[in-house]
Image 1 (spheres, one colour):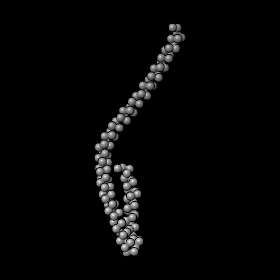
Image 2: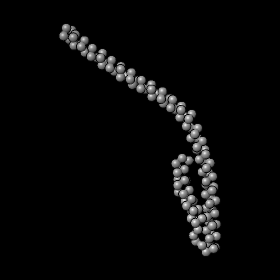
Image 3: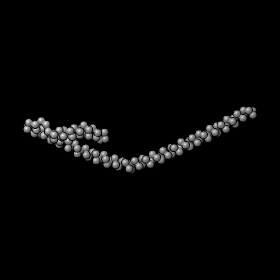
Image 4: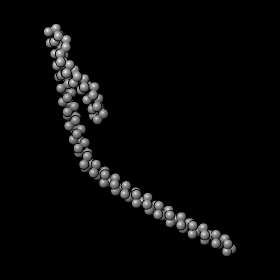
Length: 121
């Protein structure tokens, strides 16, 4: 190899070293971010499980019990509605504020509460 070719090789090697150094710095930054994300997720996973899951599980149990209770109340309300309508009919009355209120809450239960609950239960 002549002097000129040797000079080209050394020049190229020094540039390669600079590029490798830059890559090492970039990789170190990525590794630091990976370590931070790993620690954040590890801590977050642990906190979520200990702080929130117990609350979520309790809310689901309580919500399920309340839905069962409301379902029973709704069935009784519908039977009472039929009895009230028959009683009003016997009296020759077709309208009643009590019946109207009962219809509204039954409708709200059937068309809103039950539909919303299906998202979670």
